Length: 615
Ligand code: ADP
Ligand code: MG
Picture (cartoon, protein in one colour):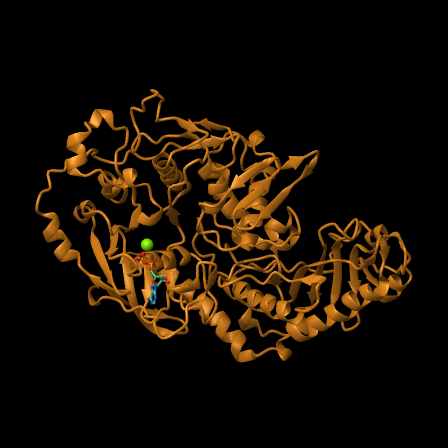
């Protein structure tokens, strides 16, 4: 990891990486690999092209012409770094073995002198991540129409991803992409390869990855938007807040499968209730106002279809930064915020869930609870304990996706079913202690149960998408006794577990296999990890990132059979803090986006066959 020690002396002491644990992006999207470092690219070239001392080869076009009609496998001989006319370096990182295999991996290194971005656009980790995200989008646009080339640009979130990075030392740009190397049957189609590699890609560098060719105003606005979002998120703890929703924000999305902002005359922009309005000074936007979501227990109530889940989803997504125009640019939540939901059927391995589940009819010990097939309530109880174990400081729960019997048990049901016949202790009885004794705040969407009015520090009501603070009225109502008795004194805390790395093997027949199937499934070795209930995963490439992070934890020995999961995640965070993209690229060059520790932990917890030791 030589390059990771470069250029981090102090220039990027601000931005995303200032606080340690659980940062979504670590120190952002650098990882520009210095070309000519000889670190890679020695695998391939037995062929004739002259190679300079730096490992750089020249004459890719001629070399390709010599391969016209040759066996497809001879593309492998081109693996390495090639200097293109104009100074861009094209690196064939990995060739395909045949035309039907997954695309080859190519990196395009645009040296700083050629890219020409002024230093203030890349002087911090946050700026580099934002600039890289912007450039990946530009490059994706530039190669649109080229079916063989695919740049992974991402969606509404600005994530550290492998597709583009900006070198922390000098502002050079690296674009990484998949390229289906052209063939006719199993023969090399050299003319087309030459067009792609020697014309289209250099032109892409020229048009999309250069300051001179870009819209300077737009680049700056993109970076400033991200920087404001990061600053706002970092300001939350000092303000005693867990989230912030700016006045004027657009929360609803176009559809359940389209994450762009909803449009049309019916959109109601967010406007904070007076009582909860907070003003924050941001580096670029200046003074902004909005609803501060305070630490403690927060309740969102209101009629069905009045916008409760939409508000919660905006907070869920507030752990990430959003592109200009998204509508949620200034909707942020603490980076240690975890969305929970019921997930019946999931696997649970040795979690102490006794705070919520006790005296099961089969007599099993719920302080050390395992099952291959959790119920709605036990799955949610386990997910809650696991989130706290991984370091969550804010929990988000929506009644739409929660297990009712884990959330509430009202006075009448208490009378009908005696406590000793009911294994479940509802969350309403421990939610206050979670905050008071463990510092874990919550935001709950609860339109259907008044029992929570008694335990909520704040109650916000949505009426036709317009929020108001109804805390005082809610507390008045809660003062009238219902006859309900609390069923627990306190949340006892979580028990740390130690994953057995031998049960987290990524290899299949001697080779690591880490693959994402959409946003929902991670194939990790022989394991199929179901991530459907891990709702804060921002895009499918992040699933790949989770797989690589897991593999990194195993390879580096962070998971060594002695460290707890939380300790191993701390080490992972340290490793990803400086430069998440570069660190994950050491596992494999692939299209990926960096995950947070919480998504990685959620994946570990969902590996069927995972063995946990207890400490
Ligand atoms: P609830 O959870 O209260 O039942 P939802 O959040 O699911 O309500 O929202 C119901 C519908 O209203 C959704 O189609 C959503 O996109 C839309 N919606 C939510 N917030 C707004 C808003 N501020 N302006 C316009 N439509 C909205
Ligand atoms: Mg809802």
